[in-house]
Image (cartoon, rainbow over all chains, first blue to last red; front, side, top):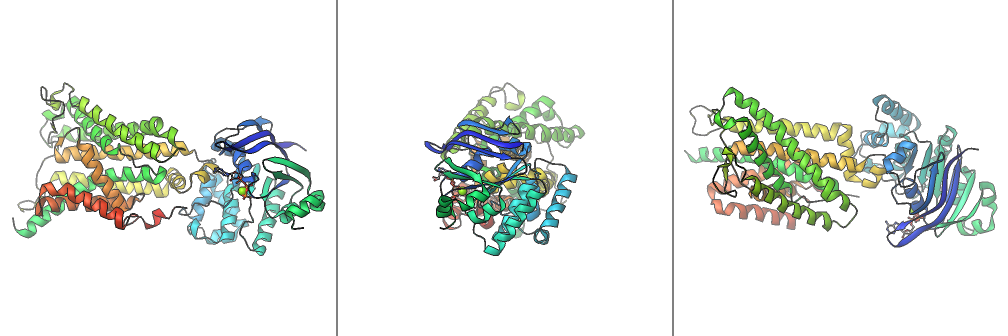
Amino acid sequence: MKTLLQLEDVHSGYGLIEVLKGLNLTVGEGEIVAVLGANGAGKSTMLMTISGINQCRQGRILFNGEPIQNQPPHEIVHHGISQAPEGRRIFPRLTVRENLEMGAFQRANDEALRTGVEQVFATFPILKERQTQLGGTLSGGEQQMLAISRALMARPKLLLLDEPSLGLAPMIVTKIFDIIRDINRQGTTILLVEQNANMALHVAQRGYVLETGKIVLEDTAEHLIKNEQVKKSYLGG
Amino acid sequence: MSGSEIFLQQLIIGLSNGMIIALIALGYTMVYGIIELINFAHGDLFMLGSFAALTVVGLLGLDHLAAGAPGMWSGLFLMLLIVPLFCGSLNWLADRFAYRHLRDSTKLAPLVSAIGLSFVFMNIGLLWGGVPMNVFGLGRSAASPKDFPALVSNVNLLGQSAVEFTTKDLMVFVITLPLMVLLTWFVKGTRAGKAMRAVAQDRVAARLMGIPVDRVIGQTFLIGGALAGVASVVSSVYNNTIYFQMGYRAGVDAFTAAVFGGIGSLPGAVLGGLVIGLARAMCDQYLETRWTNVLVFTVLILVLVFRPQGLLGARAKEKV
Ligand SMILES: Nc1ncnc2c1ncn2[C@@H]1O[C@H](COP(=O)(O)OP(=O)(O)OP(=O)(O)O)[C@@H](O)[C@H]1O
Ligand SMILES: [Mg+2]
């Protein structure tokens, strides 16, 4: 399998605090890779560093073999990496449709925009119904669908998802994970950060466990589900 | 003039000046909306625009033409291109070199830069007033107010009526109103405008979407500055006098207008501009001119104390 994303000894943090302390991780083309970790382990920091929001202080981030660390975020989106961030961060006073348009900002061309929006509406009929409604007035589940769709509008090769199940009812969570599987089947590689380890390991092929800024465990999802340590810490015994 | 005629007259004067204040207020509110900076140098940018306008008048020799002469309109048109371009670029440069580096520091840092820049601009205005051109009043002190020639005639469009609505008043509305419509369309309907709103609402999310945030902020400064430039031309032609400290008063008026309407809100800035323009005119007439600035400051303080989100700012404030 071809390696799409590779993190080599990545260091990152905030001010004097070092959060990522030499992170190594790879994502192969076509995979879903899950990253598990307790609160504050540095999962979001990792995604934000890949996206170019946080500075990569040391180490390299390779995408398709090319170093992309510390490039401006819009260049990284242009390379083909987009993110649905933690907390969704929908633009509250833009309409649903405008939110989607912003996701396609790097593509710019009207035709691409229209087909992109049509595809999203085909997958999420609810968003079509709500297209003129302000983003901030959507329910949590709808907002998560919008956040994922908005990230997909960039036609990414790699989609970064930060806790897509956060704060959602179990039924919606199942739906969101079905969608994640579908997106992957259609050819998008996914790096998924989750608290909901059970769900994450069921859609992912491989997984990593992140503890205080370092990868402490790496295996196939199948093995991780059965791993005693993972069971105890992340699967609720 | 009867009582009601006097009132009507002040209404016209107040609305005309209000439209000019609104243009400046739009620049405050746009910049605040996107980076939460109160751009204290904005009033002084307006002042520099007025000096640029007078320079163009001198270079084109417009001061030798009779008001309303054919060459005058093309001259005015040219000024409306050059001066906004000048002010817009200057504002863009201010962002590029004075504010951009401070984007991720405390909010106080760019604020202090803005105050500093305000002094820099004011002193440039003082220097500019000493330029040896006839229009700057050769031989008079650089600091003295400059006469801005009457480029547009004072003909009363209402004929024999005691209330005057002159060609100058008409000019103010003909220039400012379409501009406001254009701005609304730009912000609501274009990709760049939507990106501006996206950046204002969540800068990190905007970055994640691939929006080049610094460029969008730069565009906001460019547009806000250009609007101040239009205000410079219109105000100079309307009020016929400029001086290097005029940016201070214009700044306070426009800032108050922006806060009154709800800082960050475009319709709010226009509404606030009109209210402040009218309040000034009415105070000049019915109280005393010397109380007018006091009135504006009082409005500012009252709004800040009792309704800091302003009249139309309720939604703009619920920032996540
Ligand atoms: N903007 C920030 N400034 C300073 N410290 C921060 C900032 N954001 C995160 N941190 C710190 O960095 C560490 C890692 O945070 P991060 O958000 O990456 O964790 P996480 O694994 O995503 O946690 P969670 O599961 O709660 O989302 C935490 O200790 C946090 O306090
Ligand atoms: Mg997190």
